[in-house]
Amino acid sequence: MTTWAIVPVKPLSRAKSRLARVLSNSERQGLSREFLEHTLATLAQVHQIQRTLVISRDTEALTIARERGAHTVTESGAPELNLALTRATQVAAAFGARGVLVIPTDLPLLTAADVEQLLLLGDDEPVAVIAPDRHGNGTNALLVRPPQMFKYAFGPGSCQKHLERARAAGARALVCRLPGTGLDVDEPDDLRLYQETVINHSGG
Image (cartoon, rainbow, N blue to C red; front, side, top):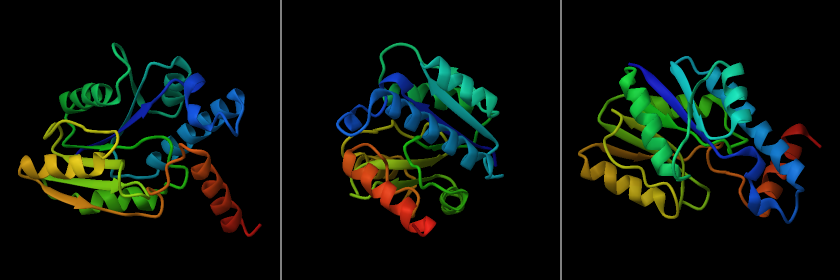
């Protein structure tokens, strides 16, 4: 059963603007680049993922993706996440994907085991598996099998919206809370929690 991972990437030069209070522009770019490379490396470890597709309008991000063996789609038109994901999903489905896993790049604690658990839960279609953020509000990972069952609703309150849309489409809708998918680094508090977690894991 062919599964593609879809990774949307904002322009690295403008990413993580909400961290401007605590990081310089070059530091934010470096962090975004580090998170992208971590995401691609993690997905490459999961043999159940047949292809990784990165969609972005950022040439550096697309170059990094290709160097790591990912397929790429250049985002065009209005810079809107759900539109970009819809286009990427259409590409994946056209090339035979029977499931798509949407993974953002701001999950620095994501592991291959987390991804494998999401895929295991979503083995029988029709199904949608939603990994919420640590507040239970947003969607930090979304597995949809088969693709294009419902419109994406990423943004505030997306966890509940994705649950409702999956059920309306007649699919099983599952919520999966995992260690590596709960923390997305957008705000200074998220960055502090990530840094504390890294220090604790390293024994520092």
